[in-house]
Image (tube, rainbow, N blue to C red; front, side):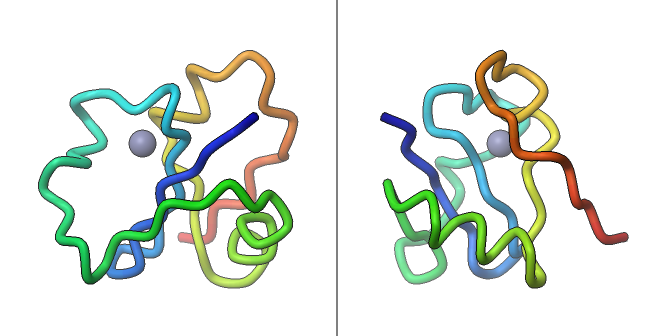
Length: 71
Ligand SMILES: [Zn+2]
């Protein structure tokens, strides 16, 4: 089961299994961080205004969600 870590300040979604130093997860305050296992919720965020963390998703061999980075 996938678990996601969502940063609501930077609007970035991380994969908890693949979080690395570059993600700086420990710096996230609880008020802007949400842990989620709800794929639909995460996909909705990604398809609106959120961005997949390039570090986590690059490392994930099973993640099939296409990157929809909005720069
Ligand atoms: Zn990340």
